[in-house]
Image (cartoon, rainbow, N blue to C red; front, side, top):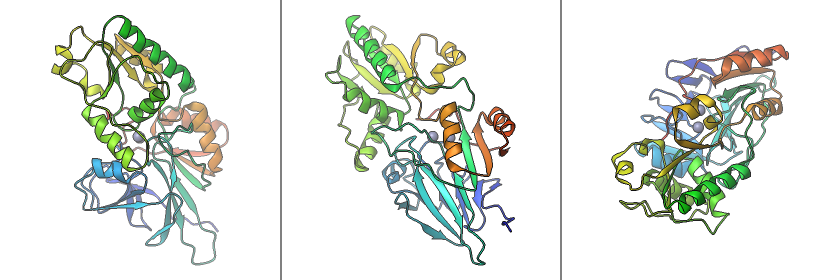
Length: 341
Ligand SMILES: [Zn+2]
Ligand SMILES: [Zn+2]
């Protein structure tokens, strides 16, 4: 007979494992939290004890400096928390990002049940973080940020090549370039891809928030060079990687001539987003799985039940139901489009 108690439930504070006594990426302060990764909507401050992957520890130390107890767990290591076993498995996405596997500790001879919580994930790999690991589970709780068939990512190498051409054009026009990226994850991924293409068209700078995350990546063993923060006035041909918050800032307004702007995001595939950022060139590189990637990852788990959290949950649920899956959606407070600084 299968167990009737769910291993993960939704509480006002967030997703909760009753038998383990911990929350996963809670959106309110709690005593014990397992945090999948450092993005602001998953790693909120105010928790007593935080468990994350060893690889993600420097990032979370930088982001949750006030947390009294931060503990790292090696990928694949099993930790007993009350009546369950917990292990973390690479989700790619950003450095240290984990899928959380919870296994019931079987005492009565009934087979252990396995619940997997995805956090955010992508299925294509690159040198900036650990390769996505397919994990088998009975129940898979998955994000679906880009859960529509229109989301199919172009080749990263092609987008990097267009980015370099755009930067070269800026140099030829005697302008500087500002490239908007998330400070955690996207910036480091793009930097590593660009540095492989050296010599670069001009000098490269990083905003202070990107520099902080680069330092955390270096502490975790990722070979990123130390890059300077931008001077008060950018020289022509320079490029800065900066979070979106820099757009329209006093510093931007002081630049002469005004810099060319571009953004690296999966959202730039969508016409509405491109319109909203008129005058900003878009390069489509995402740290989330696209539609085929989500379906592939779901398939890999071989889960008999699917629970979809944030993003395009209802359309993805409909599609999966039509194909015979047992699937439900769960309201969460993760924000698939949160501005991350
Ligand atoms: Zn994320
Ligand atoms: Zn998320």
